[in-house]
Amino acid sequence: MMTDQPRLLPMAPPPGEGTPPVFERIAIVGLGLVGGSLALAAREAWPSGLVIGVDRNDVLEQAMVRHAIDVAAEDLMIVSEADLVVLAAPVQQNLAILAELPGRLSHAAIVTDVGSAKRAIVEAGRTLPPDLTFIGGHPLAGSARQGIAFARPDLFRGRPWLFTPDAGAPPDALARLFAFVRALGAVPSAFPSAAQHDHLLAYLSHLPQLVASALMETVGDVAGEEGLALAGRGLADTTRLASSPGDVWRELCAANADEIGQALDRLVDRLRQLRADLPDGRVLTDVFANANRWRERLTK
Amino acid sequence: MMTDQPRLLPMAPPPGEGTPPVFERIAIVGLGLVGGSLALAAREAWPSGLVIGVDRNDVLEQAMVRHAIDVAAEDLMIVSEADLVVLAAPVQQNLAILAELPGRLSHAAIVTDVGSAKRAIVEAGRTLPPDLTFIGGHPLAGSARQGIAFARPDLFRGRPWLFTPDAGAPPDALARLFAFVRALGAVPSAFPSAAQHDHLLAYLSHLPQLVASALMETVGDVAGEEGLALAGRGLADTTRLASSPGDVWRELCAANADEIGQALDRLVDRLRQLRADLPDGRVLTDVFANANRWRERLTK
Figure (tube, chains in turn yellow, purple):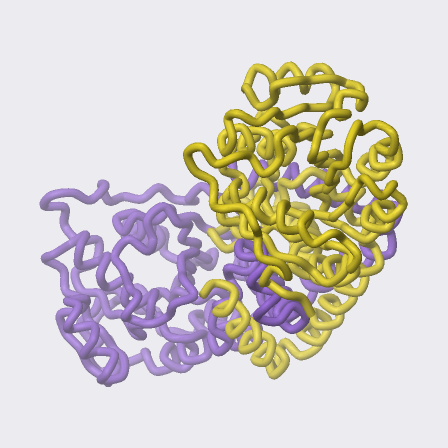
């Protein structure tokens, strides 16, 4: 289904004292939690590199105060000198920004994004002129607390960073992206296609999020504040994701609605089987046995 | 719906050096994780008290090695001198043991249990002779790792311990149970009825468990081991409960099937509304807003 090994080995050595930056000039469009953390992590990895930030003025000010960026502008014009452009705005905005890139860069550059749904942006990336190489990216790192205020340079440490290169992507572009995110502490891997990424992530990430939110709403509506005060640790863990922001997830779920819908159908079917068989418990026995097995593999 | 304040204030002072035991002789029937931890906690609180254990011989041996109990037997005869009997076997076994208690005790005693579903055992408790006072109990503490091997004296520290006294229960019996579990570090409260307990717990505990298990099964079946290796922390948190043992939960869910069934229906309805509206996202916006609000109250 996918490969957790890179299809190409990275060419850059691991970073260290005096290691040259994989990219000299990085432009990050959107300095929220992920974009801001990326800026901080890149500056930590390569103090000599240049980090260019694009966002609203109030966000840029915060990013400057935190020393996350060297150069700041509200206008996309500023990316012209970048050799790497990272789209780190919400999914729909990334599409709009990508469409504005042609003609903005003064030389060949690699473009990537950090969105959790990949099909639309990868398809849009194919329309870029030949001097711009788009490879979709998705760091599996985040927090319910959004925004530059919560950005931190170690956000990606030990986390997967998935890429969805087209078959025709220049091999060295993917190798450079792998080396880049490795230097930020992430563990890169490549998917054969954006569709396979979106299918898998519907289960690994989008379904757990929707389930945690719907569960928290359902339990809270019935138990109320007084009842919630009696809850044990199980409810707290199962609903940790329920503080995630609706605006981010609304857009993301719209972008992957077909895959998420199928994942929800699959889960709902199983919950209904479980429900119909509660007094007998044969379905429950199966569900728990399978869940025990997968949970062990998840945590090993 | 319920009160998180005791209906009666405990009469015993907080434990400390030389505090007399709330109960002199405690019999614990079933030395699994909860029964074993209860034994360890009681011995720590009152080294001078007597802890009597009833279980299979191999479990009793482990309990003796861990110094959890003073006296051990496979036969219920041994409880005759106890002034507190705690039923800590699985739900169905507790019912069978309760039925065997009349005539076994040489003097008046309080009987309680630690099961997560309360209606059946509370109803059975009403059939006991007048010298035995039954008050259902439910400590909200546990672990996926069952058995005396994982028992620990601090299992109940800071955790709710719910009681479901009948209206006619002697007031001092509840006060003594409150004082007893407070001395073990737990936070006691009383429910007006077993039915209200079972209704609330279907949401606070049983629904999150079934959702975590069904989610882990669904995600694992689709993602496989290779896919799970790419999962972020969100899936891990949401499925922490999925290592819970099926045999314990099968019995528990059968005992509370009607309430759990309604809780599942409610959640499934909401998931289906969410699914039907994914491209638009209005339901999602509502779900997330409600979930954000309840989650904040849960963790405050």
